Image 1 (cartoon, rainbow, N blue to C red):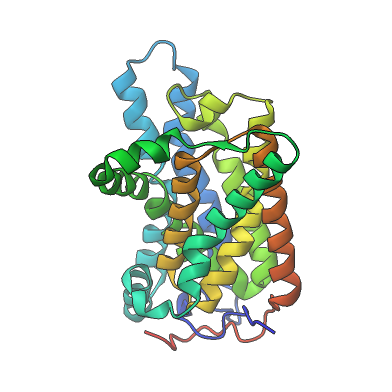
Image 2: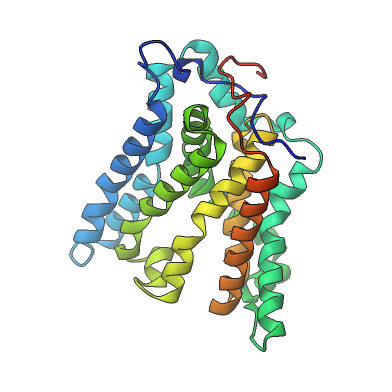
Length: 294
């Protein structure tokens, strides 16, 4: 039986339980700070979207996306010792933590579930997915690398340095991996809400209250569970979460699923999250605070 209890990893000693509970709630503080810092930029942009210039709205959009990163780095700098700070940064870049088949799970699980969702739609008479964007990159493969770098820098990297690299890592020491995944996933979902009112964003293009809106809101929690499953099996590798998130975004950009196909995909994601929650032994035991893999 797979074990995702996170027994090996750089533990945040500064956030380990102590007698007076002084650092016990640093994970909760992170979630609050991440949302507040992002919404400080996004809410004014959404409120004044019709009057402020486009370049200013875009700048506020990108600055707000740094909220999870700034919150995480701030708490690491203020609440952690030197060893924990070093460990935080190392988990972002150290590819040695990710071994064997976890590379496949990290990079191919979401594309596989996406493809299966499209096939189910086709089997029921739907169109499955459009692949114009993927075809464009097949014609111009050298354009793919800068596109991937853009996606990486404006989403997966700044988000996962916070959500998984700090928030999940701290919360699961007190709530357990599964509960922490659900908490982070719920906050992560709500964090996106102002973007639905900000012109030019992907979320604004989905609309509010549309089927696409609800599908977007439903997929973050199971993704959070799956990322924790991989994260705790790769020695708390923040890099694994960054690349998993990149695979999600890139697959979504390359293949435009129909609403029905996307519903199938998200249903499959929930099923997969349920499987790893049941058979992946999301447990508290072994979530130690000392840095055992640095």
